[in-house]
Length: 396
Image (cartoon, rainbow, N blue to C red; front, side, top):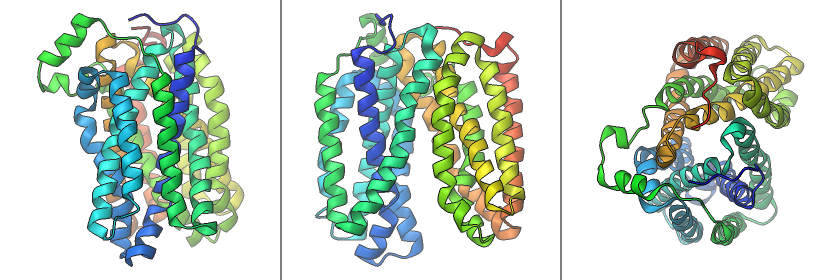
């Protein structure tokens, strides 16, 4: 596989654009789907939550085979196919006339999302020069951060000013843009012999999960559990504390700080090694969780948002760079799917256990527990990766 010497190649820019359309589509519907289920089908709170989370369930289910399928079908071909599925599924929301049909559409959409993100991340990583892996990953993942703000704002604005049909037409438009850009994308291929080996090995465990990526992927599972407490419960916690201003600006502050941190962290990681970025990010992550636990004012709550943006936001991109750094080119898709599978399992299952803690104790105790989980994650990182000199994974 030939990797371009420069970072901002035509292919990398197009991959970034595609990632932006996929992520914007995700947030556009994620923040509005529960409300749509209630307004359209008079769904209960639990069913409305299921309408939202069914998308994530579909993505997690397909992650197990996403890496193998992506390498077997071909990265660009898989991405183009899934973007076409996005187009069809976006229109399928409109005639869905019952809650079960909506859940099916959400599940299929989630599966397509899982395969599409695996393909586009693998393509982007294959286009990044190995010696600029951290920097390239940081820039690429900025699209998801931007999409969180743009997609959420667009979704809420559309349903308030026009209606839900406009929401699905916006999803359709983003999907069509994704198809068009994917058609213009040219992707370097893995070695033919390597590609054949992926096709003929079958569905062994080693062909479903990438062993080289598992150490950092299991680390991110713990990080995902800890962070799931923030995205699930921070608004309810802020309301309980009567911190409406802090709650309203929490994710805005988080996104702004995350954006700035990723512009710097990737380059530092390439120049100085993984540990120089990962350990400070873990300290900031733990500090952010502790700040939430002791917050009694809007200022402290927003301080925690800034700490989490610099901490968790950097861990996400830097961890991804570590996961793919030592992987052979033809197994890069497996590394990507392994990384996201573990992260999504942590963020998907975390709220169940953390919610039980809230029920038996309170939010403060729950956030203290997430800080303890983050400390355990730091110990795990030190054991599986950080104890190496500088923690540098090195180029594949």
